[in-house]
Length: 255
Length: 147
Image 1 (cartoon, rainbow over the protein chains, first blue to last red):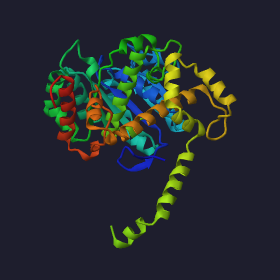
Image 2: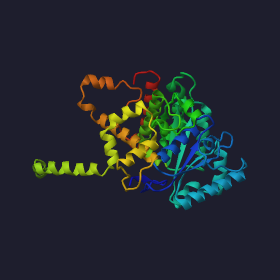
Image 3: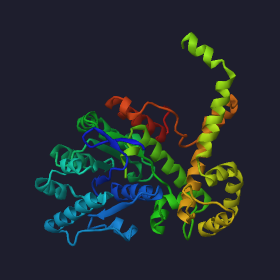
């Protein structure tokens, strides 16, 4: 069995359920990135609860019929829903991927009621924060406010700089240079967050329109499989993403 | 290496035992995985000609006597996943063979948008600045600059 580090840095076994929280502004590719994480787990035969707290886009709900979501956008409903999710995780020992929308406020308010990371540690759940960001200063300031807020600060934090957020043929280095040179970004990395770049997938819009699992598409599966070029692009994109997560030791963090 | 260990390493029986152990280790993989790996090129060609209907593929493989490692019936999803793993394994084996290729073929192989991962220091081994520099270097390549 693969050894894994726990939220408090101690080693446990791979069977521990994972709470993967997606964080980032709208249009940062968060829902897309989270759907990849969900399909990855399911493709490898692991169950995962899909929790869609992004009441405006409802992207995960559209892709996963079994996704749960709060009844309304009201904070009291979000908190009730989050409680139910955590209780289910603890009872069923099942991982969960949660999209909180632009939900730093929800997380902050929830953090006042429950010390989330400590709860996870007590219940044998591995918390991981998956930050998605584009090149805009607001993308960085959003994650800095969550980081510095401290209401969800597990030991495992992945910073995914999404090349797919760039418009047209924008130069990625130029676009992200300001972000990566920012003292706050460097501080977050120095405090343990692992930065990677998620490449742009040329056929992403096609895949989204089909609603097909990335992994099924890469295997030539599904009712309307991709053409060979697009299938290869998806395979390449997935392999690149997996290799980068492995390089920073984050592949084993995921559900 | 100690003189004792060097002497032991020269014994032909150790090489024989090692071969046997490796064969036994390979045999622990499911027969279907091994069959797919052996027939990788043929399967790629077949699936390129006509898209795999995994339900039919699974029915055929079951009729030929294949089952899961624990003896349970195959299901289309697990067969598809296994094929995906076989392709990754096959690709990894090809990468492992690279050093035996000629310099010219290596040069040709390196012309790829996203090179296959090669052993690199893990993120845990790198300093924060090195982690950032690595991402910057990748972005520079993506931006058309030489590394």
